[in-house]
Length: 195
Image 1 (spheres, rainbow, N blue to C red):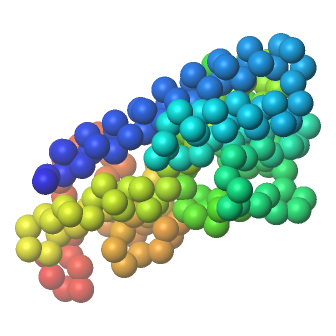
Image 2: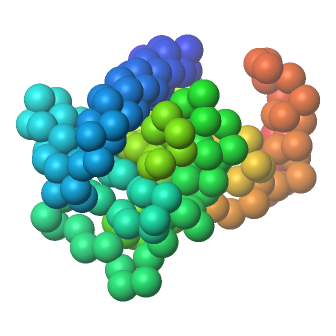
């Protein structure tokens, strides 16, 4: 497997999540026209999860601060307000777009994630689905570049998201700055005195 193929796999995964979130946003908007209860919205999320086995569980943050999740294995921390999260803020700032957050550690699951999210029409709520670090590791674990190379994923805010020895969320190194200058390409640098 090569880097181009990994890029394709990751793009397909994220684009699939974007399609799912866009579709869910429309369904939730339709349901919200009838003034649903939180239980009714949770049922919609459960229907989606049942129809899409293996997919990440979707969630909804409402404009009143409620957080609706499908997973019975996760509990929303007391005092949690989805309106303060990057996914909620990003989605309500661009209500017509499906947004992808920078990587962050999710307060509900504790995992490092990027969130694909979209505001429901009228900004009454935001629906989201996480792409976890574990999912991306699974896509890249069998990729070897040369004898000692490996896949690294950086965020657009200049942090590591996936690296074999660096903690997610850590700032990139100065030699990585040139990665942000071009859409694609290669570069060389010295690491521990070796090229």
